[in-house]
Image (cartoon, rainbow, N blue to C red; front, side, top):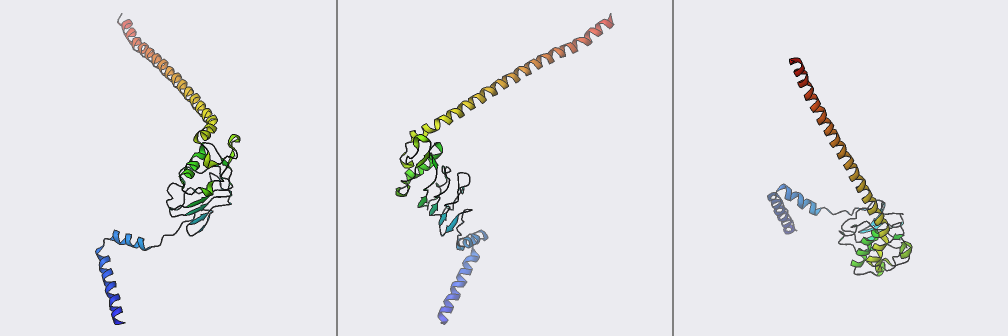
Length: 212
């Protein structure tokens, strides 16, 4: 019994000496390493261990949690109103093993490309083989996992072309406004130059008349 107490005291003394030799920053880091990491549950979701249950919450692209803990291993997003997944949402989750995505109204336009790319990177795709497009009409019922990139991009061309056309019109209008402003500046400078010459000439003529 005495031997155990002596050993305990020796260990405590050695630990104390070791800590005293560390700088304050190192002591703080050691302290942090001893503090257990608490899993932060995203708002509205229900968490158990490293599993985040965000199902049946009527989440959409705007209300879905913007980040999950890096240690999360399972995410449930089924039975919501998700049309797509925000780009990069799952990229930093190295411990993630499964994501439940069933029964969401997926819109297979350009915004679905991130989800499609992420699904293709998964080794076990069994649980993702039932994810289907709800729209557009030409892709309705198609499995997201088996969509080709050309099919998805072709569904984006209408709004993309409209956006490009609007940008071109705005750019053209901006150029016209710039040209009008430039013409106004040139006209103003010429009038100012003429006015300056008139102002310089008038005193000279008055001086000449007085001299006569």
